[in-house]
Length: 71
Image 1 (cartoon, helix red, strand yellow):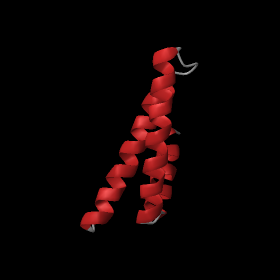
Image 2 (tube, one colour):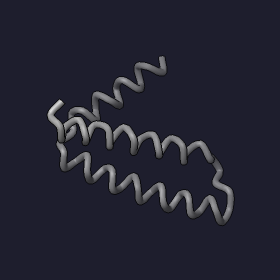
Image 3 (cartoon, rainbow, N blue to C red):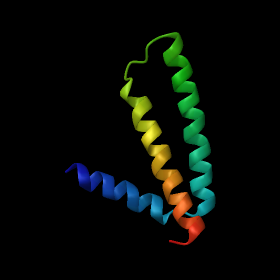
Image 4 (cartoon, helix red, strand yellow):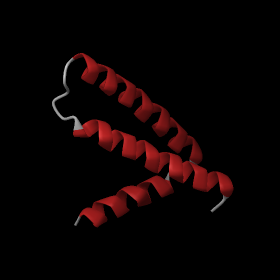
């Protein structure tokens, strides 16, 4: 069941345009900075959110690079 969700997320990212991916990366990086900062001050309720956000950024950057090289 986990692969279905992952595949759906990947398909959604692949369907996005390069500009949309860039905007999503910027938004996610900003959220990650805020979450990391707030976690340093007081522990976040769900620390796994930091890992999930980092992985989301990695997926977006990977797809952005695939579009750049035309793969």
